[in-house]
Image (cartoon, rainbow, N blue to C red):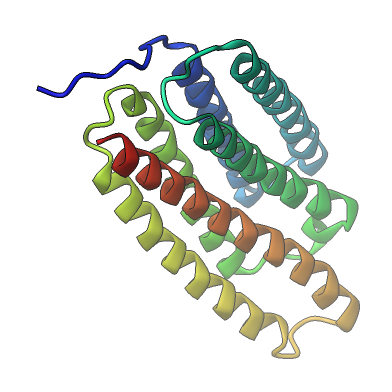
Length: 208
């Protein structure tokens, strides 16, 4: 029988779960942009509110690390996981803000590939939110990181096809520059979700 001297206190797991739930809120807000007559300013403002809440969760996590003598798993891994979850939220907020500030939603429609990327992000967010509570037991997590990595590959494919469309001559040069910046943030968010999954895999392997 394996014995562990690490505490089972749930505060860290609750903070991870809350951070991941905010990512679901973020991707669901981005999906609103695909609706007819979407209120882009409202989406952008609400994304900023969710991002601010995520920042508070991250600060609470760091404070908890510094005030806890023995943590449930390595401090470095707790810090890294919290930081990576926050990074995802930063990218999601940037997408909404840039779409609003650049006035891109005044186009007849956003590229289909951009909506495909948002859909991938929404799937990654929901997977991540489902996985975080399972960190407490370190069980049934392998399917999560495998699927999250697969979705990241789908996101890469959608990103490449989006670039092909942007440089096809369909849009004027200034619009291409603006949408390329949004596309880069979407792709970075997909990558950030994968980094979260890879960190969960590392933690699970170390603690098993």
